Structures are given as C-alpha cells and as structure tokens.
Image 1 (cartoon, rainbow, N blue to C red):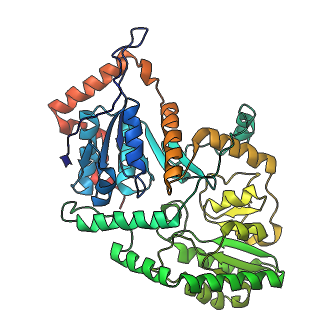
Image 2: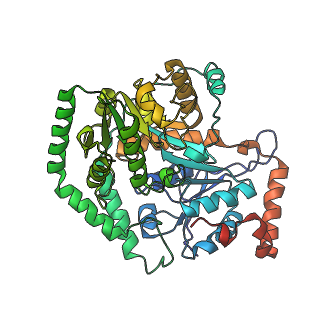
Image 3: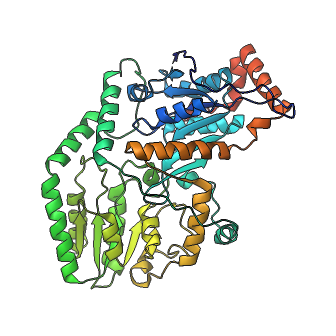
Length: 465
C-alpha cells in the first residue's frame, strides 16, 4: 500500500471546541471507488472547502487518473490483504465516514463489513431509484442491501409527515461524455496494471474485449436504430397489447446477487417460456436491450433463439435502441428483475412485476403474484401508495443531479454535501468526550498490536469471490 502524502490547502479550520465547551470532532472522510469520471474528485474538493479531512483509496490507474488530488492512497495488495489495510487507514487518519459507489463490488463489500464492526458510517452512492435526474445516496447499503422498510403502512404514515418533494430542473446527460470517461478510465487501468498488479475488476470480460464490443456497437448504430424504428412501427400497426421486458446488464450485481438468475440469458429464457405458456394469444412481448450493453454478447440472437424454441417467434419483438419511456407508455405492463425502469413504469401508472429483490417491490405498488398470473391479471398500482413511497424515498435517500455533464455533477455535488452532513448518525459538531476517547483507544491499540484487531475484519475466506 502506497500513500501519497498531501496537504489540504483551502480547508476551513475546525474550532477545537463548540460554544458549550464540548470537543468538536473533525470529520474525516475516506472515499473508495466512485463511478468512472470526475465526480469523486469534485466531492473531495467540496468536502475540503467545508472543513472535512479527505482521503481517497485508488485501486487501479483509472481511480488515480480521475482523483489527482492530495490524500490519495494506492492499494496495491492482494484482495485478502485489503480488510487489514483498510483498518490501518481508518485508524491512521481517524476516519469518521466512508463514501463509495456501489455496495456489491467485492472490495466494497469487505469495506462495509469492516466499517460495520467499527461503527463507522458508510454512505453509498448508486444510480437513482427514481428516473431521471435523481441519484441514490443511502447509509449502509442500496438496492437489495437497503435498510428501507418493506412495510407499506410505514410509507403511508411517514409521507403524511413530509412536504411535497421540491421541484428541480432536469439536468443534461451526455452518452458521449460517459463513453469518453469510460475509455479514459479503462486506458489508465490497462497502462498501470504493472503497478496495481493484484487489481481485478471482477467483470467477466477483459477491458480490450469490452472496448472492441463498443467499437462494433458504434459502427452498427445506424443499422440498429433503423431496425428499431421499423420494429416499433410494426408493433404500433399491429395494435396488439404488449408486455415490456427491459434487459439489465449481464454483469450487473443486481441480477447476479439480488435475484435467483445467474445472468440475463437465464432471465430471458424464464420470461419467454412463461409468455409462451400463459400469455393471451393476442398479446406480444417486447424485449429492450440495455443502452449500456457492451455488445460482447448478441442478445438479439439469444432472444430469437429462445422465442423460436418456445414457438413464439412471431410474437416477440426485440428493440436494440430507442426511448424506454416511449415503450413504457405504450406497454400494457412491465416485467423486470429489479431495474429502475420499474419505478419509471409505476410513475406512468403501469402494472409492474419484479422477478428479483427490488426496493420498490411492495404490496399495493407491484404485482405480488407469480409471473404466470401477471400476463392476464395485471392489476393496477395504487397511485396514492406509490406517491407516498416516492415522497419518502426522496426525503430518505435521493438527491437531484447526475454523473454525465458538468451541470449535472455540480448540482449533484452540492446536493451530496448537504445530504452527507444530514446522514451522520452522530452529531459530529458536538461529539462527546467518550467518542474522542474511543478513537484514541483504537489508535493506541492498533499501534501496540495491529494483529489484535483481526476480530473486526473479515477473513480471506469471507471475502466475496
């Protein structure tokens, strides 16, 4: 592990004591991996301006390329060495908060386990539960790991205590920006593998394989768009009701960890087989490719093969591109594993069934029966219940902004700083002397015998594989 020392120019000094004489505990934030791009650097700069101490762990060259600030720490060890290295970092810098993007990355899962045993809050960023223009920032975990209640009565009661969600102007988002940031990140990663020799991104494909897939997808963009337009025109002309099944990314942790499916191929087979067996004869099935699919696997062919195998090739339509909202509005209902397309559909008043663990899978909001019954029964979401859920969600863990334009990131950064302050489970501005003593005790114990802290970290066997 290599730490690059740095001073904190521009940091607002924190008074040693509050007005009442209680010690004022400095909040020190450790950033782990963010989304590819400059967002975590901007968060770090904003936190420093507000008086926070800020450090950032870089696990690969892409992380380091986008950080470029003092306080960077290169972790170059093996995955089984990470928990103990993290304990060392937390103790040395008296970390009070950990911030990361995505709680299912193996190194992040291990970090969350460490922080839970040390009672250090973890703030998790993720793509927004609601779309568009929202980002999730939740304490402890997101999606299937979220601590949000699953009791509908909680949302009805809590919503009555909350004001209507504030209106905010939509933020721009650029696919080109996202693609260029991804290219820069992966290039820096590949060029620095000699330094981060134990780094593994845990994705099923080599970055070069994914890069070639994206180039092929780019080369075929006009052909794919034309096919989509023709498919949609034919579907509208048929005037047949259709169900929409939006695909998620095959490597998405929400599929592999928060559902019973091993990947999207298994999910496609399950949906098409159920459609063939139980859907009304006049109904069609529309399957929409994820816009960020890397084109390594040909999902169009996969869908065609499965549809032919179950004898419904003439009733299944595949959309390679196109506006998901337009499809949602035209659909009779939406089938999803746990995609945020589900909340997009619910906001449009469309029936939704989830096949995996989703935070919005609540009685009164989503269809609670089996998929076999959904094709014919559908039902309608309770609009009042969904609005209560939406209001609580925005208050609890959603902030306005986005990741893929300067305006979106600036808005998100300001919102995130305000929410991070609100998130703190303790009042750090007036922390008790007992809290100060606890940190001092931890620091002394670690200095005497680092191995003695093994009880607060997971073993190598407990690390996700």
